[in-house]
Image 1: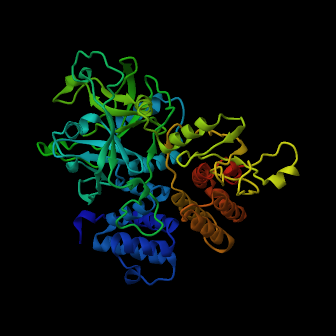
Image 2 (image 1 turned 180 degrees about the vertical axis):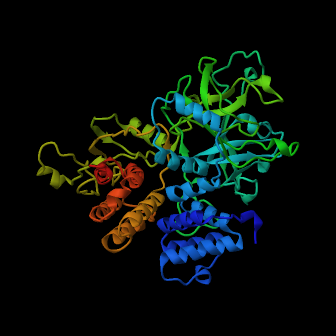
Image 3 (image 1 turned 90 degrees about the horizontal axis):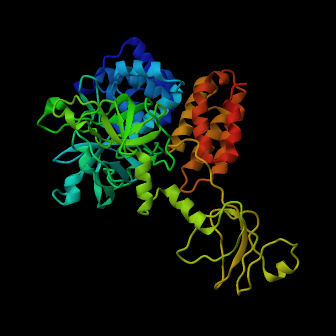
Length: 560
């Protein structure tokens, strides 16, 4: 028996685990997960035809053979945003986010003036958990988090030796998914990713004012951040990607907010971090992911620094600082310099994330979405027509609009107001909508087109990457729990949606139509109304992925 993975489950806990797995996996997906992630053959564990019996025998085998913790970790890696699995892991203390400070939690409950949607918080915490990593080097350690598929944001001082050439960037590594039991036994050593050869994308140093108790003045460029490029796009890969089953959910990343949520003194602040294990000193050893809750104390240096009361330790530098709704608002970087070495200062300190985003934009470094909008705005302004846009070979713009292109003969018979293609040896006629680009054929031809630039206001200031496969899997699991499951029209419709999103360039309207068919059928099922509360956040995330034209799907999960 593997003692590191042995968990003594009570009868109630075993039942909860079986129910969570049953609601989360089909037999086929469970078989794949076991084989790819744990190298277990389901047929060798159980041949039961009844799904509940089969899953019970899997859980029982894991209990007897000492791999219960690995089974739960693999299940969560396969479906990182699944609320049933997350709730069960949390009940055992086997989520990678450690326990919160109970005194501070009680303090937060008293001071908050509004409620936080717990289901939404739990889902977003699972996404945050997947994105945060430890940043390790021989000299020091810190925390970081994914802000793009292959980019990690951390503090300048965490990788200062490598930036200055005093250490090799080859010795720096980012560790994701480090998981341990409450008693300290390691379950997963984590996924280690090295830096790319061109690893230093952008950085700004810290200030000398951060190091002295008397304070001082901060220059606007002293933001203590480093944007590191990884050797592989880990955000686009499944959790545990070297062992992941086909179709597993991608890790995702946190997109930096262009307009962060405003925070004020007294607001709640949540920090997810990998602090050092002080009992292991002088060795450098980081703890599994921990969560601390505090509040905003003040702003210093004309808003260049945010001071807070959330607990941090060495190793926490580079951690994301979030609101109670897990909106990213700051990058933690330091503590009160008067606390050394007892760690008993009057404040901890962070950099407002909006300052970092503006600095990146000033350097021409933009998130994929920002870059797309910048190109679009260069070509045309919202609500106006664009006449005779000429596209060069390297002048691509992701424009969308109705383009009517005609030959000269067609133009003679056209009604007033239609657009045309200038004469040339070749012409192209496009019926309907041309989406994602304006197409011009021929030698130096021009096209006149009505193009409307549409800029969507984000629903939330921090936009977490939505894993559409994971959302569809959660929708399937919840419908299966409260309705007829995968039988008949519902299963076929969800199969169609899942198949479409697996394509390299999925048709979002096809996905929306398939999901609508599934919800229409599920709505008629007895017990469907009982699952609306659990289903709503997944349908909402799916609508965000599909686009505003599919907001009608929200009607199926809105209580009447």
